[in-house]
Image (tube, rainbow, N blue to C red):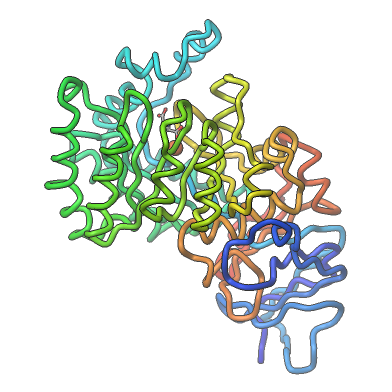
Length: 420
Ligand code: NIG
Ligand code: FE
């Protein structure tokens, strides 16, 4: 078998080898580390992963790209399974409010926050949104992200804007090396018009928006912001059940600020993930473990909201909840594309080990997008999405925080980013 790309002499090859399912408990630490590793690809697929030299069955010739992995740490491409990638404008004007201690939900209730991004996104053209999101996607790729989830949710009752966001995400998926998986999140805020009758908006989402999004194949997932003063548990249940009946996979922003019962709902209706979970109850965590619902943890958001509260990641791991970690990149609660910084937060603040963190952003992140059979680990037959970090070991990557350690990114067998 002829290899088209080979990385050899890899100081630390982190394969995440094992079953194609989210890892829990002690398996989160089992990262399949190979010292002096070698990996070979043919086209977009992985054809060999091992130690030392390539076996005689794998051949190379002049056209094979050979990369030296000495001194490097190599991992599967990182999966950012929760972002609000496509949006207009920015919200630096909220910084002063934040520093004055005004809570996130108060800014939202006063018509700011998400509503100000709704305005900017409605006003932006398709081209403007595309260019802005592309810039972010370029940055994400530089940080080692090879697959990203992108939500709508800045059109809310303006369905055309919701569709515009999804269309931008889908076009980026076609054109950009990073794979973009779309989520419909019309239920991101209660539109001002429906403040006194939010059930009316829920009905519109269920009767008009969901069928159209599903019919046009615009999204794989449906998400809801289940939160005090936003969508109630009952409204979230109705929206997500309807989404499922249209073939969209449910996921949920759950218990981010108030312990409302979002984690319990995620377990009840089998969401693929429940995200945030800063205020998730003990019972909610137990139920999620029982059902295998992935907890998608977003420490950058906790950091930026300055509440001092972070999801109880250690408890979740101990209880057997599968965990993923994402940026939650958005203009309000987490304006950064730097997943490596978020990984350091997950370790230094949430007390996850480097092994648990890398598992959470690879195979478990892939599972959070239903892609664990294709990506998330370096195993024969899987897609060749790989990051080469200029980092002598995994611990160093987490410990030396706030900078970009990426040396090269390989997407579907091609070098798509290389530090000069
Ligand atoms: O995941 N919490 C709700 N949605 C986003 C924030 C969106 C925004 O503030 O624009 C989040 O944190
Ligand atoms: Fe979010």
